[in-house]
Length: 312
Length: 223
Image 1 (cartoon, helix red, strand yellow):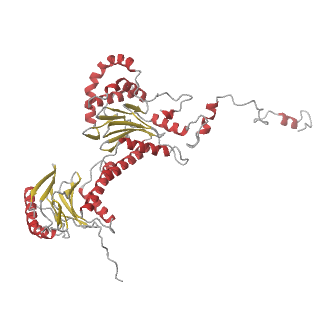
Image 2 (image 1 turned 90 degrees about the horizontal axis):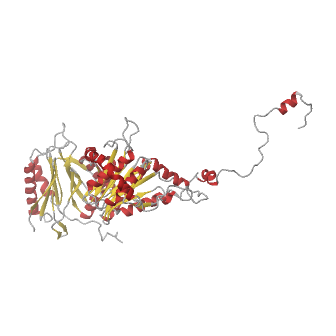
């Protein structure tokens, strides 16, 4: 563009500082932010896209949803399994969400995460139990049910028109081979546990369970329920434990799956609350000794740079 | 060329009779325990009575394989109901479910002649009687099976139930007490087993009342 007249009105107009860049910035080289942070968002749009590091981010995000849900815990002995969960209502006016479901007389499930997804999966599990009972006139073994559940979850990690279930399930069940507690992830993996906790602030409960789990195998039913209540109390972190904020369910030999009523739970809380304070200082030496033994079968490392959280 | 007739039937009659009587606060359901085929006895100790819900019991005579399949279906549907509604099915609800289940197989029916007995939502006794394809009616008493033609006239005579079509609607339940009703049942079966070859061996009597469900037995002629 040739300047016709120096400093004339046209020249002034043309030379005035523009609000927008008239020519793009010269290329300064490749972006300086880290490779991983830069491209994480590019590979997380749908579940059928792998990241360059070999991860499916949508599945990992689904596991995040589980961590956001309110806590659920499970622990088992040789003959009984206890499930417990924290029930926080959104407001004083509303009722709390149902997080523990009876699947059959010998199987129950506690969920954390998207409760709607949990409800749908519970309905699926109930159906499977009913159909198996109808055909074989005997209860569905828990191990079979969790595999079916895991396979169902896996399907949602390999279809572009689906999304993974955003709910973690603690499946408690009794069958011929004894008492079992399983954890089913949105990733389609499942693990068997002696005791486990999922959901928000579950690490506090897990620490408690790691300290105490060696006693669980031979514990009595009532001791198991007490331990469940203690573990729930850990997740409440300071809030008073009362039967209105938690739900407990039990299944065991000679005891079909049922949710304990508020009155019974409150009685048990009252019974050990007094003892609980005395136990406090005595628990410290236990904590130091029991840290090596882990309640989880695999290395529960937090999602680091290289470890895909799906393995946990 | 004449039309070919079937030389095989999917059905067989296992024989036996069932009775149910509704009282003001109880319901008695009874059936004999003989299972037959043709002129032979298959077993003297087969139960035709099935508890469907806490306050609901069904007795069925006819083809016992179909009866068993029907009982399993209803039990599975009841479980689903309990999961969805968090409570047991009431007797009238189960009555409708049974009717629908039977009609579902309208064109290959369950060869099952049922009487459903129990307590309704108010705790009063109720009896429902069915045909093989689900037509049903709430009545004060009923009898089904091979001995029904011998039993029903006797019950009509003793229990004098008003017609359900009468206006104003009259209470169909019998004013008899529980013990008297059980006695009547025993009499009725004893008479039926005299003349009906398919009824005999033992009666199984189930009583549903506010305290729960109770079972008793009485011996009958073995011939």
